Amino acid sequence: SSVWTQEIEEAQFALRQKLLDDFLERNSGRKIILAGHHTEWGKDLQFNAKHKILLNTSPKESMERRIKRDREWGKGWNFWENEEDLTSELEESERIVRYLMAENYVLMGREEILSLFED
Image 1: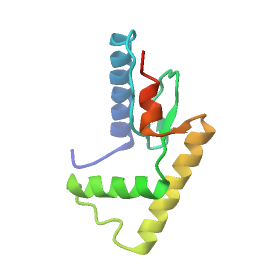
Image 2 (image 1 turned 90 degrees about the vertical axis):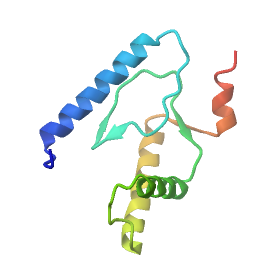
Image 3 (image 1 turned 45 degrees about the vertical axis):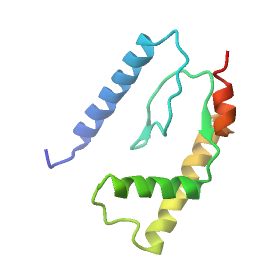
């Protein structure tokens, strides 16, 4: 459909939560790294985690990577073309980091993360 509705958004979120739940259940005896930001339109995907880790990357670098990915994936957005858009996006990235830190995420680098999975 070319029309995006709240109902479609809620159904998509519910499906993603179910897929995540099913995946975690099937792999309950394994060590798993879930990477990425698990919030969509103000809703957080729910899962129990031994460690909540935020890759130690600045909000600015994170924002720049996301913009680059979106452009490479050809999303066709005409956003981030001026200083006001970029300032707004950086503020949002900083807000997300503050939110995750308040949710007890810990900043870690790549090597620190990988060391958690050594036996």
